[in-house]
Length: 271
Ligand SMILES: Nc1ncnc2c1ncn2[C@@H]1O[C@H](COP(=O)(O)OP(=O)(O)OP(=O)(O)O)[C@@H](O)[C@H]1O
Ligand SMILES: [Mg+2]
Image (cartoon, rainbow, N blue to C red):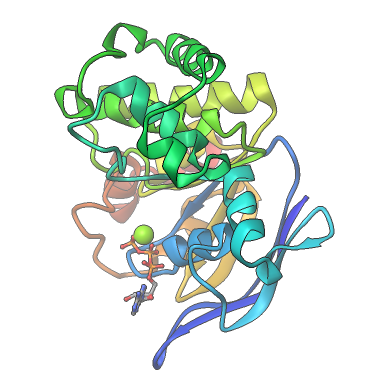
């Protein structure tokens, strides 16, 4: 079980994450929603140990993750992989090598520099690319792939670490609707077939409702909703996003759009 206890992060006078206590069970697919600046990215970065909390702690199976330093912290980051909106691939390097970079946490820098990846790792990388339906692009430079394909390469790199937890920060925010669907289906498959815990920051309500069983709503650094996606009614959504506030273009999904005019209320409640 992954949990946060009174987790808090201040940036100067801004409290990005405010006393957040959450529990995540193995094999859960969770969506985190909330307007821009709500603290979604900071929460994931704290859980991954990309940033240190001002207060509170992160625990995984009774291990205090917040206290891990150096090699142990990198070990946690291998078990808890992170996927980003901008893929974070090395653009001029081929796809297989990008996936093999997922093994760096357990290689020495010298071995990595000399590109001495083991045959076994190369075979595993190819197998993962095949599983994600992008093996035919294995030899191409990452930059030659579409956004959706690049994000699947990033997921393949994460799988190379054989992580127990995958944290995805707006993994589909830069993708067109079709590629967004493929990437979300890929994450859902990994959750269903491998039983990995997946926690995903998402911009739109409808994506969270379609792919996640549990949704967490954040507002001003706090958790204001934590429940089944079926419990995400229009009233709850308004509370998360701020009643009467203008939804930004980016935040506006089809559901939120019609939500603002009240049209999707029935759909949201009944779905
Ligand atoms: N490195 C930083 N330095 C200073 N302030 C920061 C930093 N990172 C985040 N913040 C602030 O913390 C708050 C939460 O930011 P965060 O990026 O976690 O929100 P978010 O919910 O991910 O927003 P978005 O939907 O735009 O990605 C914001 O007020 C932001 O300006
Ligand atoms: Mg963010």
